[in-house]
Every structure is written in structure tokens, then in C-alpha cells.
Image (cartoon, rainbow, N blue to C red; front, top):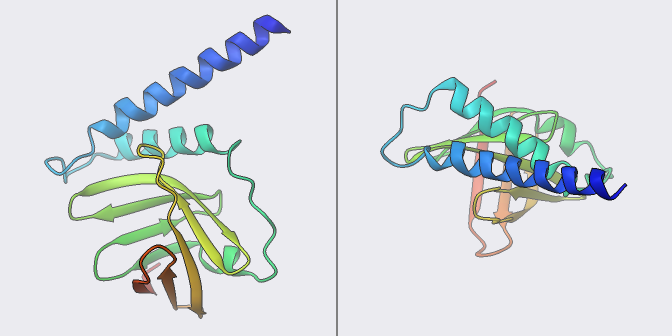
Length: 145
């Protein structure tokens, strides 16, 4: 039992090291990220955080409606059904985990531990608006896929 726990801890630490190493290369100078790096970051983000994020059942179907690709003035975001998001900005690409709790969208960035939260203020099939709970910034996103 103790050996299994040690193996689990070592495996988790190696996974975190893998996330750091693979995502470390995605920086401002590497706008041309290759698919393997993004896929590695996706898998690592999902594996490392799936145990940490308890996805509550929403009273609405936002968690189903959000699945797809969305564009705003700063980014293109893909929210996948498995709870992983992939964000593309001018500075580069990153992956993390998303969850919706009631009317709050939570996004977890694995590298810096940042977990911004946004209140969903409008949601239709092809458009949604969210408001940052940190600074009040409102983002409007349009579906592109």
C-alpha cells in the first residue's frame, strides 16, 4: 500500500515536470506551435488536473453549449467536452481545464496555477458574454465551430 502511494506520488511529480517542460516551450517566440506540443499539453493538463477539479452538475446546460471553438478580440478558445480548453493568443498557445459551476465559468491554467472565474451573463447557441469576477472585464465570444 505504501509502495503504491510512493509510485503514485512519483508518477504525479513526473507528470507535472512533463507539463512544465512541454508548456515551457510555448512562449512569445514560438507562435508557430506544433500539434505534438499542444496535444502533449492537453493530455498533461487533463491528467494532472482531472483529480483536482470536481465538475459539478450545472443547473443549466452551459457545460454542453460551450463545447466548440469561440473567438473574441484577443483569442480563439476551444472548449472540449472532456473539460480541456486550448487557448490561442498572439503570444502563443496554452491548454488547461475548464468547468462551469451554475453560472460561473472557471478556467485553470496548469503552469501558473491561475484560476480565473467569469460570470456568464448571456449565452446563446452562437454567442456568449462573460464578466471577469476579478476585474469586471466583459468578453463577448462568437462561435466559429
